[in-house]
Amino acid sequence: MLADRALVRFLLMTVFAEFVYIQSTVGLPLHVSDVGLSERDFGLLIGLNGLLVLVLELPITGAVSRYRPEYVLAIGNLITGVGLALTGFMTGMVPLSATVLVWTLGEMMTSSISQAYLGSLAPPRMVGRYQGLHGVAYTTGTGAGPLVGGAVYAIGPWALWALAGVAGLLSAQLCLPRRRAASTVREPDF
Image (cartoon, rainbow, N blue to C red; front, side, top):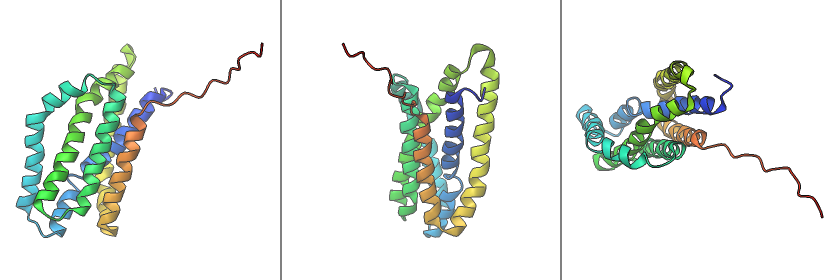
């Protein structure tokens, strides 16, 4: 299975994307506290995330299902990374709510298409194994996210948000189809 380059890229993308996304429950509450907002404010931000998912997930799924999943995943991961990276620049509820809107849109794009894309990669007799590896990648990203995110935040909050942005870019890049090498076949000189 690990000889399947598309699968390996998808698994790496999953690790980085989940690391980024989990910062909504690791870095975001730390940031909310650091800028003088309350636990209630954090609850309202996370509640906004849930409300957006409830209202918009199905329409977004319908809209993005018409496009190549690689591009939907790339754009969704990029939006999630940008939204969470911008968190470090925001200090009030309105601007933080705007970042929640951004990263939630990215979350909905990727979550709506990732399982279907994984299924398209798997040969029929290997679906369970591919899903198992995806579970390992997902757990690695969400498990390492709090540890790494918390340690990086302790070094400096800016470092966590920069790391979230970079990891978002990397996860987006891993989604894009690999370019094929230019053909080295020469046309005959007649």
